[in-house]
Length: 369
Ligand SMILES: *Cc1c(COP(=O)(O)O)cnc(C)c1O
Image (cartoon, rainbow, N blue to C red):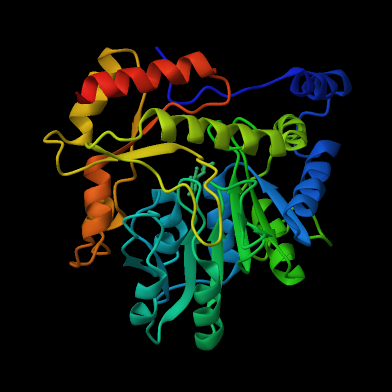
C-alpha cells in the first residue's frame, strides 16, 4: 500500500527530541517552544508567533482574540475544512459562504463584496491545496469596509503570494503542523500576527487566561491549547529543511503533471497563477465530465490496487451539523459541490519515493482506462 501521506522524519528530529528526554523538558515550559515561535516568525516575516496544540486551535484563538461574537458574520469559502467554522459557530456568529474558482479551487474573491453586510466582521481566507488566495483585492475590500482578515495558511507553509510569505498577510494568520503539512510536529499549530495586543490576547487564550499578577485567578475563559517542547523540537528540525521540502513537493507535482498529462478524464491542478507557483500541498485531481464514475468509485478502485487517496473537502454549506444548526443557508455553490464529488488527491508524502509515485501514476492511468 502506498499511503496518501508518509511523513519524513530525520536524524535532526531524533537529536532534538533526544534533548527533550535528556533534559526532562517535555511540557510547554521547555525552551524549544519559544525558539520555534521566534524562528517561524522570522521565516514568515511576522512580529509574533504563538505555538498551539493544532491548527484548529489556532483558528479558534484567532476568531476569539479578534472578538468575533453573537450576531457577527464571517465570510469564508464553503470549500474548506470544518476547522474554519468551529469557533465562529460556538461564539454565536454566522459563517457566510462563497464558492470557489474551478481552476485554483480557492475562494472567489470577486464574490466576497456582495456578501458583506452590516454584521460582517471578518473575512477568513483559506489557501487551498498549495495555491494562495488572491489576497490583494481581499485586503482592499477589508480596508474599505473595516473588516479583519484571518489567513488560514495551514496548507501553504513555505509558499509566497507576490513574493510575500503566506501567513504574513492577514491581521492574524494560522498554520497547522499535522503530519501531512509541510512542517509537522505530529499535532501542532501556530497563530502569527504583527499586532502586539492581538498577540497578547492569543497567548492568554492559549493558556487558560492565567493572569500575570496572580496565578490561578482568571478574568476570562480560554483553553489549554499549549504546544509541548517535544512538538516544538520536531518543528525546529523540520523548519531547517523547509526550502528543500517545498522544492521536493514541487518536483512531485511536476512529475505527476507530466505522467498524467493528456488523460481526457482527468483535470490536473493548476501549475501556477499570476501570483504564485503551486507547491502541491496535496496533489489533487478532478474527474472530467467524460468520466462516468464519481471520485468515490475511482478511489475504491485505486485502493484495491494499493494506492491510498483522500476525497476533497465536503463543502461547509452541505455539512449536516451546520444544516441542523440552521447555518447552512439555502444557496448552492456549484463549483464546490462538483469538486467535492469529482475531486480526490493522490499520494505525495515526503516519505514516499519516486518509484512509489511512478507506480501511482501507472495505476491511475490503468484504472481510468
Ligand atoms: C490541516 C488544516 C487545518 C487544521 O489543522 P489541524 O492541525 O488538523 O487542526 C485547518 N485549516 C486547513 C486549511 C487545513 O488544511
